[in-house]
Each structure stands twice: as structure tokens, then as C-alpha cells.
Length: 452
Ligand code: TRP
Image 1 (cartoon, rainbow, N blue to C red):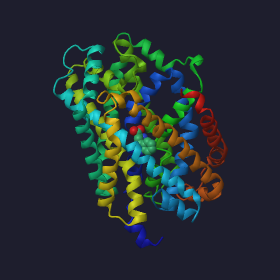
Image 2: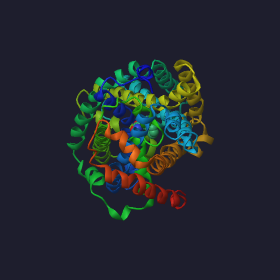
Image 3: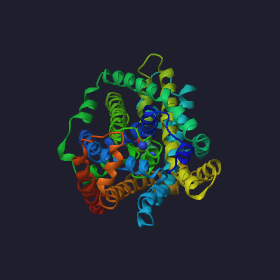
Image 4: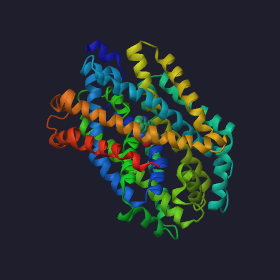
């Protein structure tokens, strides 16, 4: 690539800017909404333990693989693989990722819309005074069953996402993350401390942190692995695309490490807020699923003086965290249409954004509005297929591509630029070629027995 082309393509302003943007992609509803839901449905602490192992061994491996492909290929997923291995069928990784990203964006934006709805609800005093689990349960059920309300907030999310992406990488993505993500972190630490000091918090802490190994089974491993991919934005070419904007002088290993660490920390703290609160204030079950977080957070705000302000701030920051993730999802297909099809950024953003909107309508109507879709659990199934399976398959193919087609030797070349020593190379090589693919293949083989 010529210097001219390099300078035309977007670039992160600095190493820190990339880490913030990648952490902004990783940190989102996956940490605060999906992680506690998965913990609650999969036996508590034992899931947390498997999850942490999955992030360290498998998530980190795939992240480094994606970043190195992206930075070498200097393109969207399809173009990057074409650059590394011209005219090979491996481009399918890119197409799968692009399609998956649009589907994931569709239902993810519906849930992000719920956060906006809750921002408005909290601000208008729906959770004032002494509130109970029964009340928050009813509020959610009524809210999510109102089709026009859900649709309205969903459209807001899609429009903001599309608008930001139509403005491009630097102006759009960087600016959002720098101030607001640290604010979210501070608020979460504060809420975690409050939750831990609730009378009756112990039961929740022990559910969350004391593993009961009799609950360990294949389903727990599948969901933990899927959650690691989801939370770290892996398997769909998101990190690959972001990697293409990283300067050659950056250290990919430490960048990947920082993203994994900060993402896991936020998810862990979200659990510290949810489970003690859930067990201290009765009325909601840990297995509540998609609605869990929306039913539990209002409970903790009622236990804080000035809870209204904290509630509003929380849902505002959750919305922002979700937006930095929806933005990263939309960036994948848009980068493809801009790089490969010569569409303008604006045209690509609005066309793909509209598609995600149309695809998201059944999800928006599947929490009570339309009985047929509700019975199908449409949003839950989208979340399972595109949030677990698709990412696992994508990550598997990425590892096989790096391990056996591009070859670890060449990927390591890319990683040496910015990290001349790359001490983790032997471990990473083993994980990319064997450990990660084998674990994913085993999980996929046994999947039939797990989902009934
Ligand atoms: N990781 C984000 C979250 O936790 C969601 C997300 C953004 C994502 N981009 C992705 C998930 C790509 C999978 C693939 O909220």
C-alpha cells in the first residue's frame, strides 16, 4: 500500500485511542445485560469461572488473530483476507461476518432501545419511593409489550448509529468513547459498593462467586464460550476491521490484553451489582433472562439517596455503551461496501442501517406485542444463533485461517511490528492452531444434545 493510500484510510489518533475504541466496541450490553443473564441461567459462579478461563485462553487468542489479519490486510474482513490470500474461499469468513453483524445489530439495537426507554421512564419518576420486585416486573412487562414504544426507541438507536458511522472513523467513533466510558466505570464501581453493603447481600455473593461444580455441563461451557466471543466483539470481523486502523507501531498484544481486561472487569462488576441486589430484595428470579437487568437495576436505585439521578445517569451511560457497540457492528458491513463496492460512506451507512432496522422488527415485537413472535421467543433465538453459534463458527474459521492458511509465522511477522519480542508466541501459536479450534469443534458437535 502506498503512503498516499495509507493516509487516505482512517487511522486512530493514538494507541490509547484504539484501545478506547476497541474497548468501546467490546463494552456494551454484552457486559451489563447479557453477562448477568447468562450467569443467572447457567448456575451462577461455575459459569463465571468457565467464562474467565474462556476469555483468557480463547478470547484473547481470537482477538490477537483478528487484529493481526486486520492490520496486515488494511481492509474490511473480505478485502483483508483477499489481500492476504488472494482468490481463496476463505473470504467466506468476511461474508459470514458481514451478514452476522447486520443480524446481531438488529436485535442488539432493540435491547439498546429498551435502555433508552428506561432512561425516560426513570427520569419521569416511574421508580420513585420504595419499590419492589413485583413492581419492576410489571413495569418491564408493560413496557416491552407496547409495540410502538419499543419501536420508537429502537429507531432512535438505529438512527444515531447510522448517523455516526456515516461521518467516518475518527470524527465518529473516537469522540464518543473517551469521556463517557470512564464515567460508566466510576458509576458501576459506586453501584457495586452499594450492592455489596445491602442487608442480605451474602446469598447473592455466594451464588455469584462460590462455584457449585455439580452445575457444570456442556451447556454452561457453550454459553460461556459464546458469551466470551460476544462480549469481546469477536468472530464477526469487528476487531479485524478495527485492527485495520491501527498504526504499524502499536503493540497488538498489549492492546488486545487491555481490551480483554477492561471488558471482563466491567462484566464482573455488573454481576457484583446484580446478584447481591437480586437476592437482597425478593421478587425477581436469577433465571429471568432478557428482562433480568431491567428488573433488577431499578431496585438498587431505590436504595440510594438521590437514586433518581443515579438511575438516569446509569441508563444514559448504558445507552452510550450500547451505541459504541452498535457503531462497531455497523462499521463492518459499511467498511465492506466502501472498500470493495466503492459506495459512499453515507449511502452504505443508511442502506445497511435500514436493513438492520427491518430485520429487527420481529425482535422488537417478540416481548409481548405479537403473541406469535413472543411464543417463538424470536429475540432469544436471534441472540442464541447470532450471539453464540455464529461467533463460534466465525472464530473457528479465523483461527484455522491464521494457523494453517496464512500461517502463524506470517501472522507473527505482523505482530512483531510494534512488539519485537512477542514472548507469548509459542502459547498463542498452540492456541490458534489447536486449543481454540478443538474446543469450538467439540462444542459444536455436542450442541444438538444441549439445546432442546
Ligand atoms: N461486544 C459488544 C457488547 O458486549 C457487542 C458487539 C459489538 C459484538 N460488536 C460485536 C458482538 C461483534 C459480537 C461481534 O455489547
